[in-house]
Length: 515
Figure 1 (cartoon, rainbow, N blue to C red):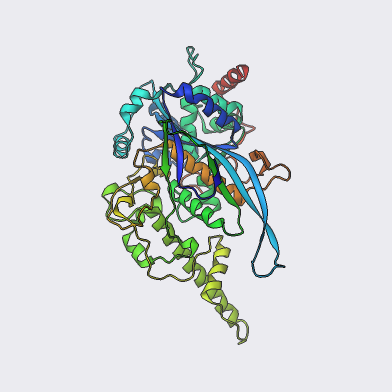
Figure 2: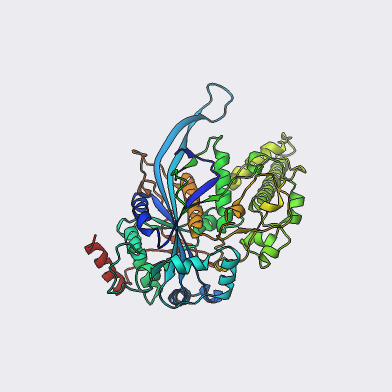
């Protein structure tokens, strides 16, 4: 078991009725020891998307609550990230002279355990045709869900709830241990999580937010908020954000930047319920200075998918949905804009210097300066005609997820689109040929969070082993949830004018009395 900043596959433990007893201790221990837990829910539908994006937040919440009461969770993904150590080393800022100054480079090491939990609601629920078709097309096994899904019921606890190993008990472990939870586009998942595994939803948005403050005392983190409000990425759907962080993190390894290193448990081959999602990096990336033909990318890419993470034509789309090509093209565009801004500033400086001549900078220095100004990665200055080749088997397209209309496109599968790729190069599309999995989506969410902790988190002054989020001073984006169509996030906080709901108070008393 070794840690590495560059990883090619992620072990995901499939959990269902037949192996819950065996896997239960591992899940509980992973949650209790986690620095934070990435989460994702696969749902049977989301109802009318316009209602879920109402301008008035109370109306938006009521629509989400109605959906949660009539739809169900199909699978629950948990990815437990334990920050085992933050190792600091001194590196030369510029390796030119022995006397060059040095700076601290931090290696954030995480032990990661990921679980994909198949669940089955015991009550009647709606399955929307568009969701059913999408999941079936992308490998979701409804026969397995109905045969092996772990049973649950919505709303408040039942009098007959005596099972020591259930989804509600798992939720209790999260609540009691005050574990920070991380989502990508959190609001819908929070509503479903609360009503499905905790208690009946309160009638108003204010009460719901007040309850959440006590349910998740460790804090709620939304990577969609970070990518939209803080990073302002060209796109912010889950796969794009994950792949971008993964690429930039691998590029940080040989440079003077903080890096995330992951460690996975070594599972024996006899553990048939452990499956691997592959996520190898491409052979060429603009971050490394590799050349890419931007004109060719403009022609072959599906620009709707590139912007939003879904395409109405799905696997029948003749354009490429390859996420690495999308990120390469965005990098080229960013570098060109930086050079243009730099030249404009130079021209303005020349005009104001009363004719005094200034030394013209090369494209190389222009791009470096522009990239730093934008907070972007430093891309290679020269764009030449050299395209990353790919094989037809690994080209990637995607249908529209039920969550995609809420800009939570975490679900990606591979389809043929006729592009040529580098032999043996695998990407997220290949990782999902075995089926649509909430567990891997939860891992991607957690990884994004781990990466941004290196950028925005404050290092603890003393111990750097078994780090807790309270040591990192991450209040800047704690309890801030992305809202589609809004300029400000939803802030999860207690209000002097709103009390917690009765069902929540009773549930908390019950949990604490049995702890």
